[in-house]
Length: 107
Length: 116
Image (cartoon, rainbow over all chains, first blue to last red; front, side, top):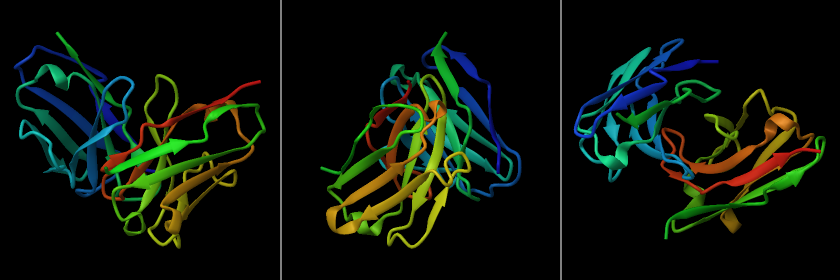
């Protein structure tokens, strides 16, 4: 199976700053990758699919880049509502797999 | 209102069985691929099973293969997960989710606890 590794595990950022989250795949996933945001007690929310396409209603401060084995989620200017856990997920091959998550916390 | 609502979770003893349901509304359920995804307490997300829109194609994670069965009833706008031979490590919140190229709609989840 494709192992997805996210880094860092925790990212401490001040509001208004830029956050860069990384996701590495154990083999190429092409652009078949999604990013999700999850807040405590809530279901995950789709942010990005196709590695770089924002889902419906997602603000432009969220952007995805990369393909193959290295992809990145960037939040250009963190808002208070963006502090959460973020997961990447590949859908290039079965079984579908998620990364372990990056927690973005307030610095 | 476009939504997914899971039900059927609860406390079950190791070796026991449980059937989860997911009721879809507000969209044409029969047009969409569906999956079950779980999250153990304090842990990350784990995809469990997938079923195509017609039900003709099904996949499982190795961790549940042979024990869990996914199914759907498009006439009832419902998705199911039959879970047998449950183990402590199956304890999790189980979400149903829509889509294949990114899950764009999730339910709120139902908690399954496997404990004696």
